[in-house]
Each structure stands twice: as structure tokens, then as C-alpha cells.
Length: 111
Image 1 (spheres, helix red, strand yellow):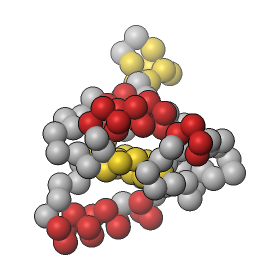
Image 2 (cartoon, rainbow, N blue to C red):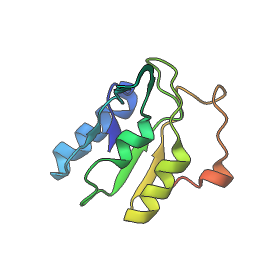
Image 3 (cartoon, rainbow, N blue to C red):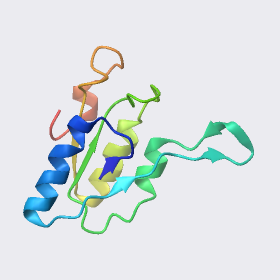
Image 4 (cartoon, rainbow, N blue to C red):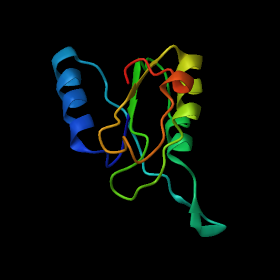
């Protein structure tokens, strides 16, 4: 699983790996605004968690989106990965030093 509109440095390698191995790449869609409040929206974690996790082995996500700076709740995604036995890969190239990440708390499989 990757996120829609994610920086290409975390998209192209997964596309290549899926093409090479026949794995399926799932893209979590950008969270839509909530109908009751267009300024509020669901979150990236909501988008990821709502997907069909059948066969998911890896979630590769950033701590923040480069497109709009929205923060990605990696702890919620970590818990979902644990439920499904999937690895969490954190692509911190765009957020490192900007968004605090506790590797000790998050325990990503590949920081």
C-alpha cells in the first residue's frame, strides 16, 4: 500500500518491484472532505485502514505529504499493520526534521 500523490521516490521503487514480482500495488486514495464540513476531511490513516487488506505485506508511507503538508498518522497505520501482519516502511525523505518521528514508539520495520 502506498498513498495517492506520494513523492515519486516512494512510488517508482514499489511499482518496479510489483512489476518484477507480480505483486499487487494498492494506492490509498486522497482522503475526501467530510460532507458536514468541507474544511475538515477524513485522514490518510482512515484512507489506508479502509482498504481491503487481503494479502497486504507492506505499507510504505511518509510522516507528512509533500503536496500539502498534511500529517500522516503513522501510529494508527502501524497498529493496522500489526493486525494484518504487514510491514511498515516509513519514507521520511520529505518529512525528516520537519515532522517529529519517534522510531522507538513507532517501531517501523524499515525506517
